[in-house]
Length: 449
Picture (spheres, rainbow, N blue to C red):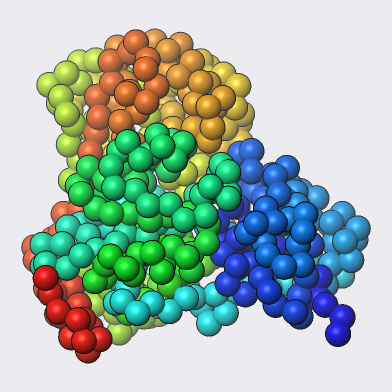
């Protein structure tokens, strides 16, 4: 039987999961290569033979996505698989057109082919775009489930930007584990606040192995989604965030619209700073496309560690990187805090940016007086530090979740901005979770601690 030759378009996340869950060991297919985009410095590597398994003695090469057409021709590709998230519908069809014009089929893989089944109840937190507020919602859900007496394992969507074999299955319980696993800034942003709250967190590359490890010590699996991807695990309760600041995007971005349709609970996030028109538009989308979902309204409570220090100061605002870059937002919690706390000026860092940080501003021209926290490796982290040090600000207001000041070691003063989920109807999410998990755990023959 002639194997179909496959090219997987990815960004070091779902691409590897699609391979592991469907293509690895599948006699009908040969994955000839991956491509990479969105994330710096992830092309030019190989998916290692130790993870790829039988039939891939040299592993699988990873090329830049810009080489798509050349790869289809050179490798005689039969099928191109799109396996990354937070791309507009127009971008999806542009990739489809490039693939089809090159002579290959174009495929989107869905839940049936890629989702793994757990022996434990699975609650997932996903979104329609990057930067909707998944992290704070996941933390709140983990706290609520823990408060009900259940052991929770948080499983985070992958960000394997280092040694893939070492990152196959990672378990984190303390902030020291972030150093032990040589985590990037982007990983720290997502993991650190879970760990400081006592949550056990898993991540890595092989999500079947990760699930097996998590099931050994948890009553409930909490899928903490990345970008606007749908879960790698079949969810018993799927929570999806929509963003009224980007009303309409719930219908025009892939696979965010899939999440909208799959959702059991839809959270209208950041309602306190959104326009009435934006809130109305997303609610109309929900009513038209997923009327069965329960709808909750929530805001982000933004606080600063030293609020009095901000008033009257010239501040540099640093925000979560992916939210600003491929998430398309022009501001985040740090900007909100700067305005609310009376900063005299938000300093524009663009003319002081160096290296890859300057390149980031060129690639994302919508960014103005805000600095994306880019730290995909030591070199870029050094360029971020140099940019901060060169920007003439009296203090740095950090709207990214990790302790950036401690990580960078800059001489500048850093003030951390924190944000937490604030339900409009207090207790509603907790009640839904309590009713759901009690029934699901009971049906599986397990009891509360």
